[in-house]
Amino acid sequence: MIRIVLAEDQALVLGAIAALLALEPDFRIVGRAANGDEALALVRDLTPDILLTDIEMPSRTGLDCAQILAAEKARTAVVIVTTFARPGYLERARAAGVRGYLLKDTPVDDLVAAIRAIAAGGRVIPADLAAAAWEAGSDPLTDRERDALRLAEEGLSNKDIARRLGLSPGTVRNYLSEAAGKLGAANRIEAGRTARANGWL
Amino acid sequence: MIRIVLAEDQALVLGAIAALLALEPDFRIVGRAANGDEALALVRDLTPDILLTDIEMPSRTGLDCAQILAAEKARTAVVIVTTFARPGYLERARAAGVRGYLLKDTPVDDLVAAIRAIAAGGRVIPADLAAAAWEAGSDPLTDRERDALRLAEEGLSNKDIARRLGLSPGTVRNYLSEAAGKLGAANRIEAGRTARANGWL
DNA sequence: CCGGCCCAGTGACACATGTCACCCGTCCGG
DNA sequence: CCGGACGGGTGACATGTGTCACTGGGCCGG
Image 1 (cartoon, rainbow over the protein chains, first blue to last red):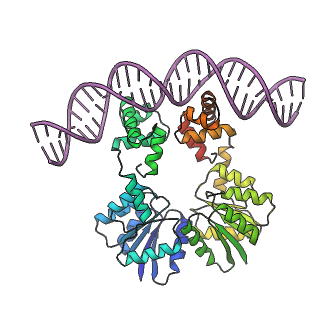
Image 2: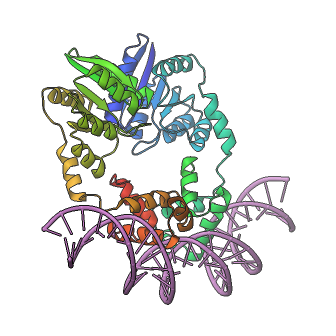
């Protein structure tokens, strides 16, 4: 019997996936969480075989959870199920010792097969995702560049960003210019878009 | 027996919701579509009681489908299930005669209850969403302003936007300035964000 | 202990953007 | 038939951004 905890913030999707997996005779849904904190608590309490989790959730992302569980040397294998094929996400997942990374548009049968494979000790990372992550390389941004870019994305001016970060406007300008250069972008907007598309924000 | 066609582009979510609804004895999933065109074809072919559809899908959005079916005076009641509570989406749904609008974070039981209510001739629009749509008012942008804003969002310069739209750069500047003014935004980035948040793009 | 990276800043310059006033033509409804 | 909205445009001006060069301090690893 494979014991599973599910984490997903959209109640409907959570319920639906639970219903789906409950159809498999060798699966048992032992817990459901609507956010990262709940997921961690359930995993610690129940030590399931599998934690099947979304990435973008309130309070803690699925990647945060994976990282924390890895640090605790938990027995539970973490499987990420997400909408986004962002290289940065996949990279962080790898670093956190995640055992599976699936997209929400994979067929149902593949998910079930992946869970069985992972429960048996395997690893499931689709080849095309891994290749894309390889191509994209790794995050070239420094922490401060990321900070500035996040605020720039929201439409703040250099002056406002500077105020929020406690910097001089000139420095902010330099950071954003640097970031755009590294990302091959012509301006802050494009820079923000590529950084986000790659999961670097 | 309530006959349902499901439309949702994420295969996993599609399969999961199908599994969930199949548990109800009086529901029957008669068709599944992964995009708007498939959904339309299935509805025309099968004339189900309910089309349960996502909004953001390839080829045609769920709102497009609803509009087309309304124009054809189809018997099928359209129910939107989406992640986004954007006022503009809700407004367009209302205009297309949609019979239900639910968020993906509503509990499973609510979805089931809503489907039964709608099959019985009712309408289901959560009061809080309706209120938010009321507050937001209606789309103040003209078509050309929307076009310009969409391209500005992607980081194109006035010159590039002008080239793409076959306009002069000055005109583009004016459109974006107008749009920002109407939306109470300080610049094109903020304008793009608010427009998108409201479902006006 | 030195090179290299990150953080933080300044000054100058070119160019992009935001704002405003004012222009024309078209089309539509009162 | 006239006003008003929309599409499209120009010119001028103030600000905001993007780019570059150059300065310094702190910290880490070879």
